[in-house]
Image: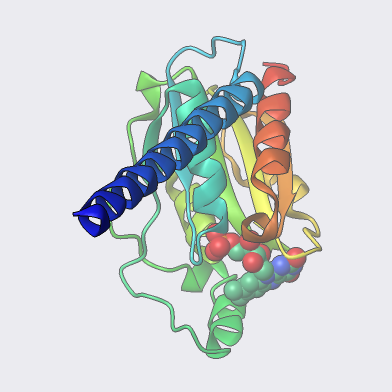
Length: 204
Ligand SMILES: Cc1cc2nc3c(=O)[nH]c(=O)nc-3n(C[C@H](O)[C@H](O)[C@H](O)COP(=O)(O)O)c2cc1C
């Protein structure tokens, strides 16, 4: 009988400890989200926003999704008909595709830019400039006086990315964007603040 009571007491004690630990961690997690939210607020109203991006390994997608969340944007992912290999061969393929004759074929038709007030276009840096799928996209796009903001992700050297973007975004009012180094290795809070501050300070 005594053994039974003792086991029951241990059981209740154990459950209480688990419950307290769970509640505390949840409250902490909620506080963390609230604290992060303070850094997430974008105070500007950009109107109807479109975020266009290409991403091979997730870095540019990460930034594109943050812009989408913070500005309530629509999203358009640039996809190529032929997928890239994950071997070092990609560097050779990418180099060849910088020639306009070899731009990669895109899978989907371009979005209707006329529906948007502001368009973000994001690309990884390939060979110190815009990645071939985005070059292909830009060769087909006519932004007809729309405000376009570029952004790049890279491993340490973004070369002539922004100057090249200015030249290739036809009929756009280009607003110089932002570059992000080694996105997936960056701390969440640093990245979040960088995107928020950038958006809050954009001069449209
Ligand atoms: C073909 C190729 C060329 C690259 N050239 C450069 C470069 O010139 N400078 C640089 O800093 N990073 C370069 N990188 C690294 C990418 O820019 C970087 O990892 C980028 O964030 C990848 O974006 P993603 O994950 O959205 O594809 C290159 C990567 C590839 C695959």
